[in-house]
Amino acid sequence: MLAIKALPELPLTEVLDLALQAGLLVHLSGGDTDRAADTMRRIALALGAARADTVVSSLNIGMTIERGTERDTAFRRAPHVGANFANLSAIQRLLDELEAGQLDVIALRNALDHIARRKPFHSRTLMALLIGLSCGAFAALFGGDFAAVLITTLGGTLGVAVRFLLLAHGFKPVVFAICASFTALLVVGLLRSLTATPDAALAASVLFLIPGVPLINGASDMLAANYLNGMVRLTMSAMIVIGIAIGVSIALRFVG
Amino acid sequence: MHAWLIELWAAPAALGFALLFNVPTRALAACGMLAILGHACRKLVMDVGGADIVFGTLIAALLIGLVAEWWGRRQRDVPLMYAITAAIPMVPGTYMYKAVQGLLGIAQLQANAAGEEILVSAGVNIVKASMIVLALAFGIAAPHLFWPKKHH
Image (tube, rainbow over all chains, first blue to last red; front, side, top):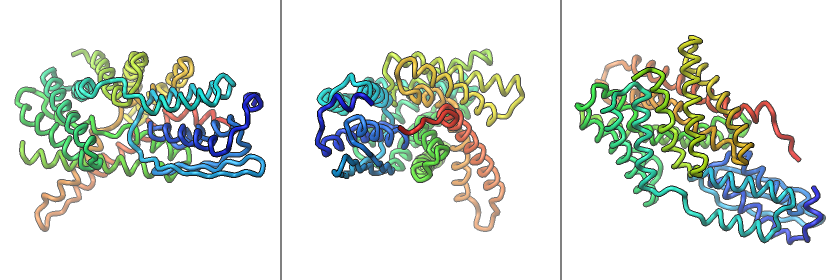
């Protein structure tokens, strides 16, 4: 790697800091285990470390880097929150530029700070509406009629709103899954006389909660032989599905 | 509605989740189109090829994985962004929900009633859902499983 020679020698602590910051961003943005580990190692090596060993668990990330006789280790707490593909793409581009020698340390640090600070592209309201429409689209895919699409969209949107509200107040996944699925199913259940295909509407109304990213990432971690993180992600998904089912069965007792 | 036109609903189904996953606006159209492509491919394999839903999902997911890898590299984006968003309409939410929903029905059984039927139907749904998820993950991960990167 030619880039290494062009860079002045950085203190190891600083290399470690930048690598962990990028790894943390990848982990928090829904990257799988390999991607987080790979990001940290590539940054450390590109910034002059001779050797980098990483740890990525579901709650912490850490690494030890070595250069000559020096050695440094650090860990960061890394709770899993969700998916942010814009961040993953941005970090991948930074890595490519860094390894190609087009990016210096100051620019890298500024870019990482910028990624960590920037807000989601889309507003909460727009998200709630379009995720509600996603549920309506699922109702159509399940063979529902137009009325089913409409009431599922309404129920889904209200459910997403409840989910965002509870998430913002720091409730755990099971709790917001129960409340949000209860809301969505109650709304659709009360309006189901409007449609000829109530089953499609009822089944689709809670799908906004299905944890697609942890499910697919978890299964893909298992296939990539990252068994521990794979199990953690699959368990997380299972808890949300159980929450959905609890919310649904409570709501069904109200609407019959 | 014409049976094939229904496949177009895969795009809005994927787009809501794309927003949730903070996919940049410039990439939304590609995500929607890939979602339709995947979902229609599954229907084609099942209707014309006579395959079951698991095999249909596997073929569709392989297609999504390969197209996402090619398009993602071309756009200098993370291929996973296109692959996961496009796979969302095929996530077997209904099977999972039916399975757990059925299991909770055990709570309403009479004191001495047997619950085999509930267990069997829940078990079938769980196994089916797991196979579909595994097929999805395998298809999406296929480019990395078959062409592993060497560690440098």
